[in-house]
Image (cartoon, rainbow, N blue to C red; front, side, top):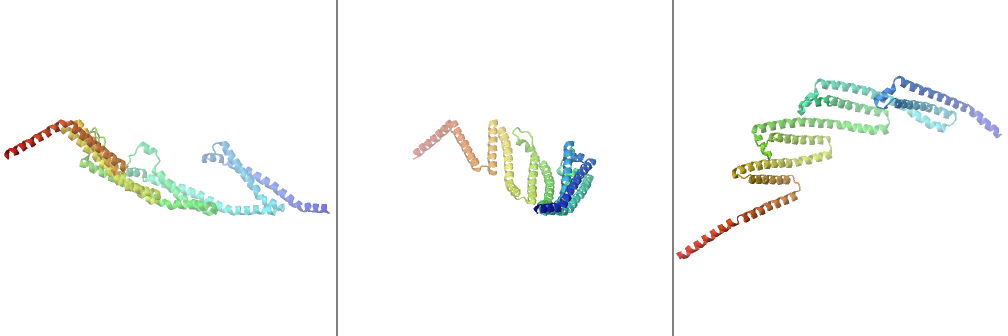
Length: 408
C-alpha cells in the first residue's frame, strides 16, 4: 500500500519534474545564446576600444574581461528570469514567491530606469551643445582680453597657454545646467534611499550657487576698484613729490623703492581685504566671516604701525644726515639714526599689541641703560670740568661774603 502511494506521488509529480527540467534546459540554452549575442554584439561595435577611451580599461585584455563580465551577468539574469517558473513546476511556491516579487519590482523599476537614462543622455548632449555655444560666444566677445584688462595683466605667452576664461565660464554653465537634469533623473528613478540624499545635496549646491556667483562678482569688482584707487593714489603721490624722500627708506641713501608705489600697494591690499571679507559674508561661512571681521578690526593697528615705522626710518635717516653735516661727526649721526629707529620699532610693536608687557619692560630697561650710560659718561668725562666750575662758584661766594663784611 505504501509502495503504491509512493508511485502515485512520483507519477503525479513527474509532469512537473519534466516541465521543470525542460524549462531548465531552455533557460540554460537561452542564457548561453544571450551571453554569446551580448559579447559578439559588443565586439561588433568595438566596445573594447570605447572602454579604453573612457578610461575603464587600460588594455585589450582588461577590455575583454570587462565584456566577458557583462556577458556572464546577462547569462545569470536570463536564468533568474526562468527561476520562478522552474520552482512553480516543482510546487515550491514558498521559494518561488520571493523571486517573483523581486522580479515584479525589477520589471516595475525598468521603465523608470530607462526614462532616467534617457533624460541623462539627452541632458548630456544638451549640456554639451550649450557649453560649446557659450564657449563660442565668450570667445566671440573675447572675454579673456576684457578679463586681463580688468585685472591689469598684460598678455604674455605664458598667459595664452593657460586655461582660458571662456573655457572656465562655459564649464560652469555646463555644470549649472547638468545638476537639475541629474536631480530630475534621480527623482524619476524612485529609489528614495539613494536618490533622496543625492537630491538633497544637489539642492544645497544649487541654493549656494547664487551666493557663490555674487561673491565672485564682488571679488572681481573689488579687484577693479582697488586697482583703480591704487593707481589714482600712486599718481597723486608722485605728483606731490613725496618720492624724493624714498632715498631715506634705505640706510645707504639709494632709491630702491618708491613711497608712492608702496603706499598704493598697501591701499590696494587693504581694499581687497575688505571686499574679500564681504564676499565671505555673502557665502555665509560663519567661521571665515568671524576671522575676516577680526582681520578688519586689526587693520587700523597694522596701517598705523606701518606709518609709524616708515616715519621713524625716514625721520631717523633725515635727522642723522642733518646732524652728521652740522656736527661733522658721522658716529653721532649714526647714534641718532638708530636711536630714532629703535624708538619707532618699539612704538610699532606696542601699536600692534605684540607682547606689550615684554616690549614696554624692554623699552624702559633700554631707556634706563642709555640714561645711566649718559650720566656715567658725563660724570666721569666731565669730572675736571665740574671741579673747576665748583671752585669758581666757591670763590664767588667767598668774595661776596668779604665784600659784605667790609661794608658793615
